[in-house]
Length: 235
Ligand code: CTP
Ligand code: MG
Image (cartoon, rainbow, N blue to C red; front, side, top):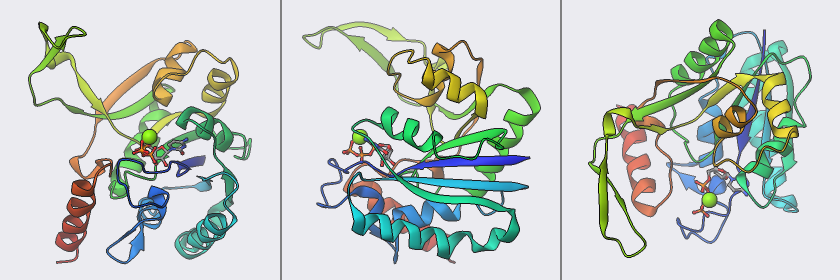
């Protein structure tokens, strides 16, 4: 087997507001991107990794290349690709750029947000294993705990949505490689996640259990929560 991993790290991090692209913001002494790469450690078989970085940013490209060198040497001969490519204006465009840089020999692809920096290694292996076992798209998700209401344009409540039927999506999202490339190439509209694009292309997607630690670092509060989680893990 060969698992291709696309780590999207081209976003600007507007909501975090640190003035630098989010994936390059330090957390407990290492960048968000470096923490994300550490999640790959338990992947079996051959592995190819593409980091999708901020376009036209040579300084960040060099930093991302260093991160690949420092974090992925552990794979030895099993590492069959490690590159950095320029992202696009949307996450969709960034994923597409990443897919184009993976070796055709990969049977499974995992698409991961660098911003989900503390995703446990076990979530990567579980998603990849489920894709191989089923041939489906596989997405980790969590039950929704809050009561969810639909509102109109003036914020008047219309109704309550049955939360039993809802899951909040995380990454990595896993797919048969050829199937995801086909879905992106068919240009079936800009879905908000990869599972949406895969499903628009006719693919079946199942949700498996996610992990609270795979939360997306979006705001300064999330950055503080990430620092606390790393400190707790070090105990
Ligand atoms: N991403 C990307 N290319 C884009 C936009 C987003 O590669 N054009 C990536 C981000 O780097 C991140 C992931 O997609 O790892 C999820 O996006 P998000 O959390 O929204 O990150 P940002 O877009 O950077 O943050 P913000 O929306 O606050 O600006
Ligand atoms: Mg964004």
